[in-house]
Length: 148
Image 1 (tube, helix red, strand yellow):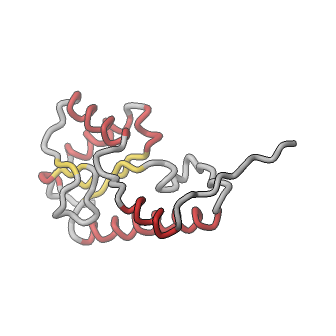
Image 2 (image 1 turned 90 degrees about the vertical axis):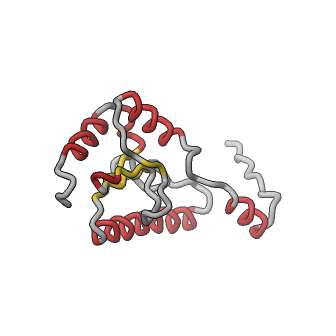
C-alpha cells in the first residue's frame, strides 16, 4: 500500500498565524448567504447582520424580539448530530480547537440570556430543509417581551 505524501507547510508557524489572522469570517460563508436569501424570499424583515453592539456579533439579530441568531457550521462548532470526523493530522490541535469553540458558544449564549436576549442556533445541516424557517417564524411571532 502506497503511503500518502504529507506536504509540509512552506510558512513558519508565525507566518501562518499572521496570514490566518487576516481571514475574516463574517459575510463570506455560503451558509449565511443562504439564510439571508431565504429570509428575504420569505419577506422576513427587521434584522441586522453582525451588529457590533451585541455580544458575540450574531450572524442575524432581530432587535424587536431581542433575538440573536447564529448560523453555525457543523464542523467548526462540533455539531452533535453530524459528528464530523476530526482531521487525521494534528488531531490534538483540532480536538482542542473544536472543544474551545463549543465552550465559547456556550459562554456566549449564557451571557446573552443573562442580558435579556433570546438566542437561536441554526446548524449547517438544518439549512438543507425548510424546518428552520418555520422555527424562526414561530420565535419571531412570540411576544417580544417574553424571554425564554
